[in-house]
Image (cartoon, rainbow, N blue to C red):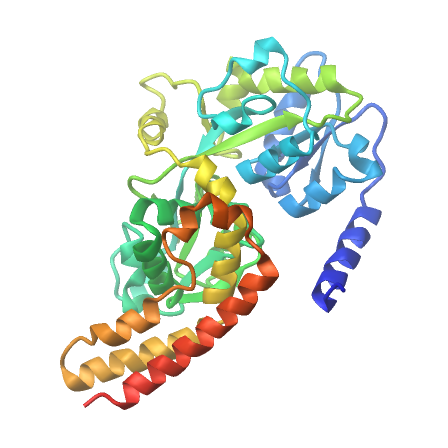
Length: 411
């Protein structure tokens, strides 16, 4: 029997699909997870090209696009454009993407091996922090330079992040942190940052909007959304990249049921052409091309910096995507206020006793999933959301009781 939440999600999905606008026969339709302002300039420039044809967008979340391509309306979408490798992998497994012609199949730089049969990477972005400078100044803090800097106590309530259950961009950042620091230390760092989070945005592009609106001092975001704002001469905003952190390619693929495949592949060839690659550097796009920029280009240095970033383990990202999203949601979002209260009690006790309390920290940082399970094919293949939620509920109750009991018995 479906839960009330599952019935609501089904109702919402059907409602959204019912409101997909009618498509004109001559239009090429791009289904994208990007906000309209993130792709509109590219489409405007395409329309200036000789012999171009109309292109329009359908802006949806990854899950909504996946649902759409599983219905009769799938034929109304010609291209999929997103920075989510999970979206393309899941569509590829369902045979929802067309095979690439030979002249496009060789463009595999920055493309994960598991996406090569059907997908093209045509642009790059990096991850970092958008700063609200006046709010940081009020907190008496220098500009954060790293993930660790976001754990500073003066940032309490001033950090803005998006939810990985709604934002694939944030999901990739969380996974990259776990790969960089390891399962246990990675979650400990993520939790310390979450203790400073004042706002959790439902979408990744909402993070920069909230920083701009003075709702937070630091927004964790992808660079192009931040650069679009900083390029508008907004002196109270600044952006900084996370050091030694993976890049985010932008992918595009042709929908298998599209009846405009020749036009769709022509649009992809435009994106990979010198003209299309140059357009990516415009302030209204603020992405980086996959072809090297001339040495005297203002963005050449940053592009080379992104080229040199460590790679992401995409197979690991894919196989534990449900685990990471669910654990973040259950461990840190649903219990965030409780965990903030527990850490506050711990800091009070350590201050009163004038010594660290590693035994209490060990209780608070324990996880219901081990590092071995988080990479175990057997566990991940048979991952059962309902059963794990029940197991985790028992774990979190025992953790809470164990912490309170240990705190009360301290001398």
